[in-house]
Image 1: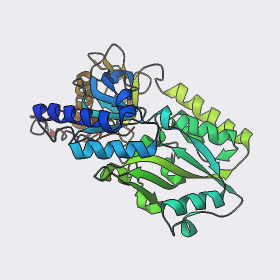
Image 2: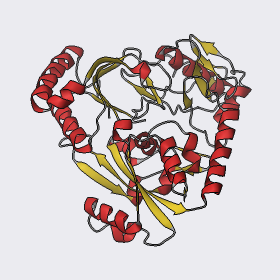
Image 3: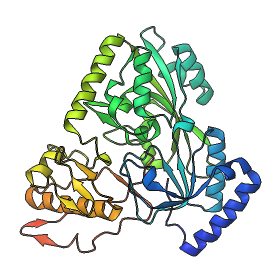
Image 4: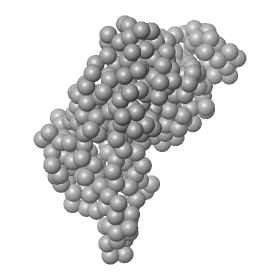
Length: 375
């Protein structure tokens, strides 16, 4: 959820002042927790980004819903962020209120099918009968969205639950991963989700629950990309398994990641979505772009699908490199690489001539639309 361009800068400043006054009166404990001018480079895996006007880490779901409602009614731009693993924050920072869901909202609990059914009935009466598997082969895990995916995978392994081994090395939070239906090695998180609770981005910002196919999961997509809801709690269905085999699979995935990905550098992971019939990294490598650098941003030599921060990169450095990669690959192969990373803050200012220039017989691709993040 990010509506940072809805009002002019002077209007935003006045609305923000009024919002802070209301917050201090109605929620003094939250007001005391706010950070002003928080550098977002400290809260994204890219280590890039200007300051957030107001920054808050909630620890209670109901309070989060109340603050979101107050901000929406006051016309305050709200940016939701998870672990910041798939986000590029603009150098100018984030206006309004930035809410980061992290370890303060990261509880994990195992539930029997009967317990999971009771929980779901409380959220969506009448839905448990056709959504919960009542058999001895499964256990449910109820997870708050600020929990890291790696912590969730470890929790599952410690309880001898199989299914989430692939997620052991994926950076980011559960909420952000649900938002984009994160995945790896042929699996996606949506494959294991029974239900999720979310806060509506529109007033009155109530708590709602999505069940089963309502999530509209597809490749790197969920309904939350469309409705802007803030995922706060997720119910996973996992198979009982052999702990030694589960940990062996996790060790294999970890070794494969360490061998193929530049984990020693700040990055946002794979920058581009996989184009149909191709691999983005191979297209970039075949274009001779390994090691290509603009400012402090560089195409990784180890994995060409990654852009890494090698020397105090700015968001403008990263965006310029993304644009150069897209144009080069399109000119050579006619493939329009679609970025997976989300831009937060001021909208990306496109090269106005990019859509009209031509190189030989190849028209350059359109600039991608700014997509908001909960990662």
